[in-house]
Every structure is written in structure tokens, then in C-alpha cells.
Length: 217
Image (cartoon, rainbow, N blue to C red; front, top):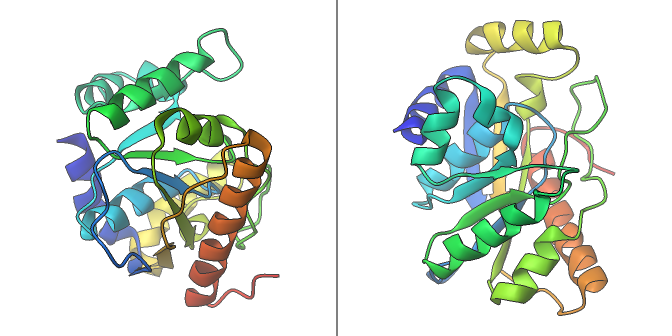
């Protein structure tokens, strides 16, 4: 219910376009990995995936579960809290592996955090953490790279700027684009798998950035 409400409301905040290189039906239990550069991008990415008839559970910061009502809604839909920099951090990978084994798709963010930037421009993904590669290795899951751009035009910068951006987005109608790259199997070695995933997501991000008029380097 919560995810569907988000998906229904997201188009009010901008113009969303979606492209995909996926040619065949994806197997159950596929991993989607996206770049992460805005508080708004989870809603943008979820909406784009729903248009393509994918409804993954999302690995997200555990702080969201402390927000009244939101935490219950996230748990009810099977989304996975990530307790970063704590002894419980590994539990998120276990929960994700369980979801994949049960046939659910899982969406995670390779960088594991938002960039420390205040401008609204698109920038290439930062270095990835190793959790994605370890999860793919443990489960054998296929990986779909997801690149997006434009969400920072909805919300970026300081808390005040994010609030102002969100409130004015329905009037400004910023263009957001999400691109799904071709599915791949990551190399078994963790370091190589992490590098391969970042390379694939960066390529998808470049496609998305060009679609919204950015000039990625």
C-alpha cells in the first residue's frame, strides 16, 4: 500500500521517462543496483521499476523505520532496514538473501550513502561497498544495473533547500530519467564483482544523465 502510494504521487513532482536494455524475462530473485544521489531518488526508481512491472523490496537506511507509521508500512511490505556501522549490518544481507530465495526482487544502492554535495547536477556514482558483490556471490542472483538522473532537481542540498525543492517541484516539473542496463553476472571475486557492478551502473547513469540534458564526464 505504501509503495503504491509513493508510485502514484511521484509523477506529480516531475516528468519521468524510462528506458531499458532488458530483452528477456528476468528470473525470480533478481538484484537491482542503482546509484544514489538524492532523498527523492528511491521514489523515482521505484516508480520507474513499477512501470516495467518490477516490484522489488528495497534495502534502505534503518533510520526510516524509526519514523512513526512509515516504519510499520515498510516492514509490512517486506522492505529491509540496513543498520549501517553497527553489529547488525550483516543482518540486512541475510534478509535480502532470504527475499531473493523466496522469489522477490531486491533493490539496493551500491554506494550505501548519499553524496556529500549541495549542487543539483548529476555526478557519476561514488565507490561501491562490497555488500552487493557478496550478496550476488552468495545467492547466484542476476544483477540489473539501474542508472538515474534528475532526482537532485527535486531535492538536494541543505534540509531547507530540499524542502523548498520538494514544495516547488510540482510547478517546476523537473525531468527525471531512469535507465536499466543489460543484466549481468558479477565476477565471483568480491573486489572484481564490486568494480564490475559500479562500471555497469555508471554506464546506465550516463545514459540517464544524457536523457535529462546533462553532459556526464
